[in-house]
Length: 100
Image (cartoon, rainbow, N blue to C red; front, side):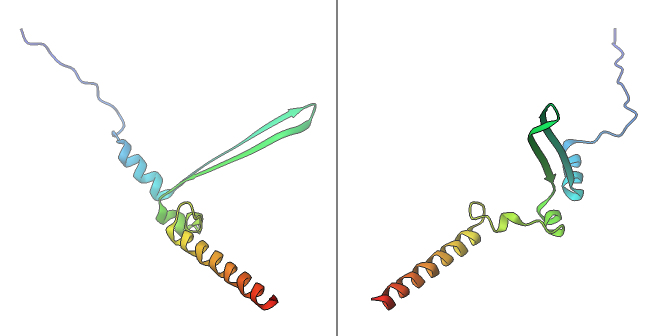
């Protein structure tokens, strides 16, 4: 005897995780929240949380590029930081030579 299989039809089109992620990264999403601790109407602690999820291209388009200046994340920033330190040291050496 053959069993009859039934499948449930979903009224909405199925969207996989990759499609959702692509849409979020393309458009960007901001998640914001505040945590405030008060006792007797006196603010003891306020924490503001802001999270932006977007692609690098979208972030750059919005003017957000902090990772390019962070020496922990960017080798170009590390090189610039090293150059600045070398210039400072050279200036200090020159100053010490002039004083001697």
